[in-house]
Image 1 (cartoon, one colour):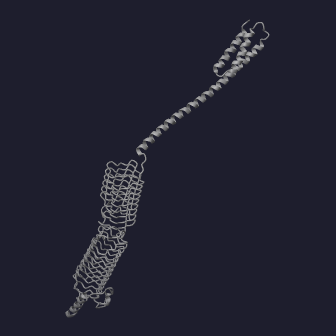
Image 2 (image 1 turned 120 degrees about the vertical axis):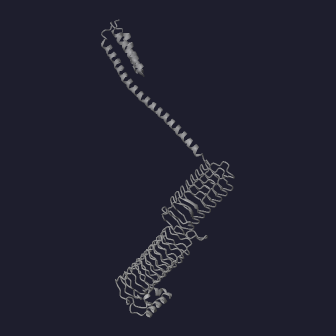
Image 3 (image 1 turned 90 degrees about the vertical axis):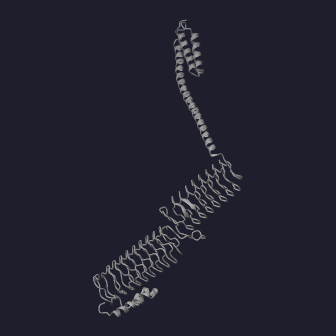
Length: 565
């Protein structure tokens, strides 16, 4: 400042340097005004001024620089407690700047150099710091809520107890930064480089850390509830507790080898079908009811994970040792060479699944659906298949020593070349079971019915016989009906013809009565014999030929009436 002796300016500079080197407690950082050498705004009064072409005062402590323009300037003057609200410091050189307690709300610090700067307790709310370089800077107790720091180089910076609520850290480099007890709620940290940082008791609720590099960081007591960790790299982090977080990280710290099932990542009920990069190790994770249809998890370790009732149709699995897969829907799943030792697959749907060369030693498959499943060359010693549906299952060349097939349904299954020493088949259904060259097989207590092929054959044969009988019976009934109809028609014709002949006989009698006065002219013996014979023939007539005889006799009687004696 013009008019201030150099000795005084030097003293102020020395005082500020001492202030910078003095450790600050969180309480002091929160209220920097308690330690400021002056009252904010009581210094040089330069609001709204363009200082880019002016010589700056030697000391700008507590200066009023609201809305001032300092773009590109190299500032060596102390700015402790200065009010730079809304000021423009784009590209300014502020390395080692003394700015503790400064007010920089809505200030533009884009591309500014702030390395080793002291900004403890400063107000940087809604400030623009994109592409700035505050590496090794001190932000203890500062408030950066709503600020933007996209692509900023803030590595090894100190953010202890700072507020970074809603700060945009997209693609920022803040590796090695100390953020213990900092408030990073709703921070936008997609693809940010935060590896090797300290997050002790840091609040990261609702933060966007998708794709962020967080490996080798310390996270003791950090709160990740609602944070999006999709694709994040969390390798070798310490004391991470990610309960309540969202998204599936690409890398996770290796679980404790003795972890308890369900103590790992919590993905209960999640739809994970759109995830492309899974962590290498999800041992002990809880995926109860998750949707994994068609997902390739062959490169993911799921030992002792809880996968109850998951939907994993067509899913590829490889390492699921001791996992809980009860009720899982694994139809058409790709489980070739999978390690399922001790896994619980009770009531799981494994129909059409490919389990070739899988290790099912001591696995539980009670009540499982293995219809049409392929289990060639599996190792299933001491496995429990009690009550399992294994129709048409291909069990060729497998090892099933001491396995339990009690009450299992093995209709048309294939156990050829399998090792079955000590295997139990009590109550099993083994109809059509292929057992060529099976070793030590003992089907005692099992039951067998006619094979499906014979059942089909006899069924078809029975249908053929049935239709033949139906055809014959129908033809017979039809013939009987026609015969009855024809008999009825003949009876009607016979009655009609009988009435006609009855009238003929009656007329013959009438004609005889009318000619009694011609006694001497007629051969009455012949006439009366014919009349009597006609009446007897009519009375005994049973068919049309009998009626024809009646007609012949009547004609003979009439002829006798007309023939003279």
